[in-house]
Image (cartoon, rainbow over all chains, first blue to last red; front, side, top):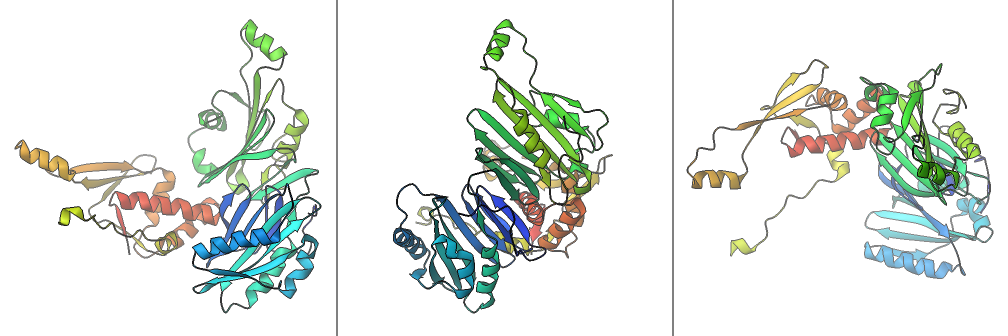
Length: 314
Length: 127
């Protein structure tokens, strides 16, 4: 599917959502309600508004078999899915992805959607928009959302944008864990033996009320074994932690052969957004400084230009 | 054969319905504040039925109602202070999100979880 850096024609004030290979702009009152590895359920004030699932396709892609599966799922929920022509407003946005339209109704709820396939990136997907039976504007709104839908082609850095956090990682890093608890978000990625964890805590003013950022970092799970130090002259506060130095001869021997994991972490405060952001990277042998720089430079929160600004680069 | 029939559990209210409810403080809950300004809630705790039965069996006076204590953290205190019997959980979550610059969804989940915890202990009711 197309690999585009910019979402063109996105209405002002819409929110960007970039997650594991897809990128979409949604109306301001839509929020992710359920987040899976390759699944997003986006909700509005009224309830579920949009659902999208996607994944790589290995063999031949069959719209028919995907529709059959969809029909089975909707039947289980008391709905009846049927194939129907794609709404005219959607054609311009979806024509590049061999779409086939469907719709279903269950009680007072209806959904209109499309099964998509991009032969170029060999990605299959299903997108559907939920609306009430008499809501004629839903299809037009969906057209605007679909207009901004992009699939990451796998080349270049992959954007990540969910809730208020934004980051870019090399495309080879795969999402291995994610957790969005109130006040604490964690995204974990891996590529071979290299692991990257992104943290976001809030509200910083409360979390740092009676402790320093160093004390906070050393109390956090996953960061405890590291020795943190505040970077001098950094305002707002930035702390960095590294794995303890090798002590025994065997440890030094293992480190020399890349058999020992090394870890580096950085936490910084974003006072204007009342957040603490954290980046932890672990690898065998040594940390890839290019990846470290790229992630620490791009990781930030909305309305903050870049995470690099509030903290000095190394 | 009543003992064979399973007890009917109350139907849990859906999250969306719960967030529209107005929390009301239990009037038997007494609150005090520690030096840092955080609230400590003192609430009556009744002994579990089995403990009362055991106490009766060994003919020991189970004593008066015990008092449980719950110290809220700064965020819990902020939400507790917003419970005035007029504002709904949704309105509290919106005010909480604004005062702490949280994402609206994040604040709603945090307030809902907090309200559920308070409700479980009988410190608040929803209407």
